[in-house]
Length: 161
Image (cartoon, rainbow, N blue to C red):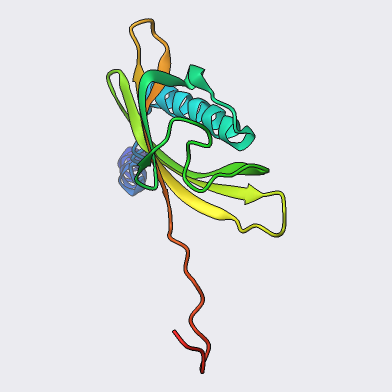
């Protein structure tokens, strides 16, 4: 029985050394501010896109002095986004937003999908700046949207330029 305690100690020591400490996976910090900014941006953009698809003016989502640029030209009337026309819908694609203080900015990919099979779908990108106003409301200050230029089909052999 006298040899049992050293054997027991050896057994316990072996078990302790064979246990590998588990490090928890690193946590990703999520701030309420970034989640709120993303939600605010998506809500405002979706309202603006929906209004453009209906050819309405959604003044409640823009600041009075907002700048809207579509394919390099200022726009004051709907549709405000490049490539958007009547009789279609706008689908949001990928987006990325950042927040600093009272500003949210980022970019969003969108697609105008026509109702008529005679028209082609148009893909575009928009860069957006959103600000929190003094009354606490969030509004779009700047939108710059663009679409890829149309690519005409190459001339067929034997055709003149």
